[in-house]
Length: 184
Image (cartoon, rainbow, N blue to C red; front, side, top):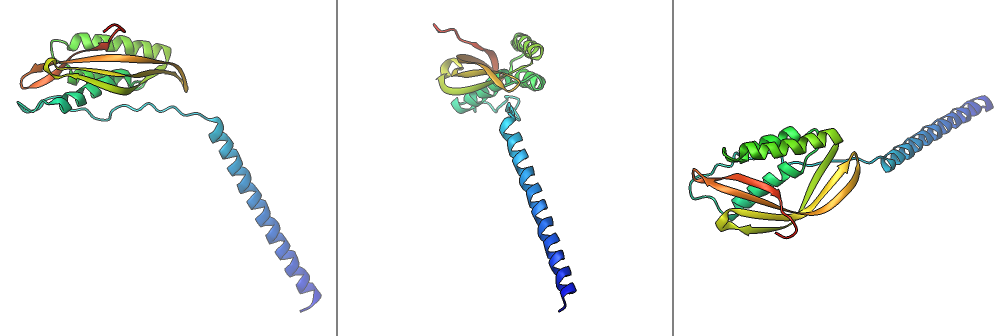
């Protein structure tokens, strides 16, 4: 081995180490920037139910669990919404409600949806407790309703929601959904 060959080999290894160091420093800098972005960025996710059946069951199959599931579907459709998901909530309430009560329920929902679109707010309901009056086909769901503007929760209030059903053709249909006052 002569001096020139050893000098070239040393030079190549120094360039390789320098290149590896620059690439490593670039990767570390990219990770730091991505971490800073994740830390400073806030994402809002409003979850809504994905599918709801049409509410019809075979005669005699209406039980407490079925009414409870329909009540939760109705509450989620009414109170878990954003300006982009109001059409879905409306279609769910339309399928669950009875023919006689459908217009009133949808009118109430449309007022809420219009307000949400105009103010660009979202709402999310967090259920805590459920009370049943199976004889009258009523379910009272107690929980917290959070109102969100972009990514900031602006209000969080305790709410009791009455969901009333009406037997129809061997099944039950949504007859009423609304907030209960403190006294009720």
